[in-house]
Length: 467
Image 1 (tube, one colour):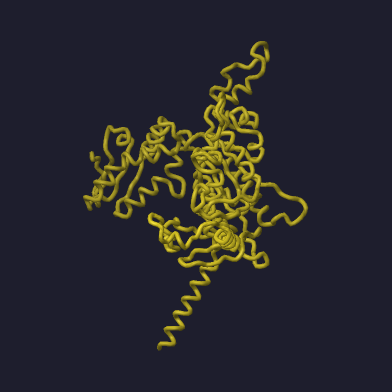
Image 2 (image 1 turned 90 degrees about the vertical axis):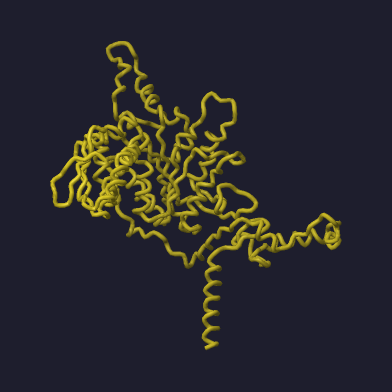
């Protein structure tokens, strides 16, 4: 019996040691990983020091003029114990070791990559409209992961297909990327460009976007190197005009991101947004990371109008100045020249070869967004009430009234949720009180505040009731 217990303990100890071997050890002094600094010397309390730092410590002690043994008896001087170091250290993040090259297997199989039409068909189930954007994204992603899977098997090297999507707020830029990453089952990091600043200034370092991807990949470097990074609000780092101060959150950020977009080895902090002495660093290669940038680019339409109206304003061939004022598809005419005039530097735009626009949402599209996608907001509320055995229905006129209210807010699809939350509050509160209610029908009068929803009791005719 005792022998069996010992065998179980030995097995558990071996499994624990094997699990710990999957992660790299970091030097407590210089923060370098084991793959860079070499074999580590293990001290008590799971503290590791590389041989270089240990040797420097010995040299300092042997060559110094201070007798460390006398410090113990000097009043007011406290000698730190090794155990105290553990309390000073922040919660450590572990980084998985890279597998040996001979054992490494490609994470992506070119035969398993879905074709562009299949990617678009999957996006169609969740996103209404934006046909051109979905098609452009499907082709770019397909070509990118073919490039990753083949790993440039011949002399022809395929360049990255980083993307720039331009569209008004609430048109589905972020949702499009989230859906795409979920369908492809790859790590995704979403970050805002508004918090990024040049290294050395208050804010997030540029490398923090890669650090977030590493965290999304469970600190697995190889998995992170094939992920997707979506940088939203990219228009906020445009070059500032008429400023005499250093542009630390504009042009400087664009210049700092050039190496990330192109593909290079960057040292990123693990579990933090900026580098410091107490955070371990690891190296990530961004060559196979797909970067997708998105932004609303306000006032870009005025820049496009100015370019289109460059023809002579007099004569028979003259263009009217208000020719493009009512053009709803004006944003689709964007060119690289317009983005440069907006404040994006040419080197940055050049590393985003796939540029496409998303259309603003009109009344009909907002109605479709309410009811057609797989996880439409109306379906979510219908499911919530179905758990209480109550059926929820919406009149077509009610859906149109919701869409018209959303258009007045001018925040795109984001306004739909706020409007529905407002009028569904009383329903979600009152319905569970009465077990006799079998169906609730939302009417246009209820949305506009001139009436109430139609309440149908179980086995009875429908009646209109004010909540």
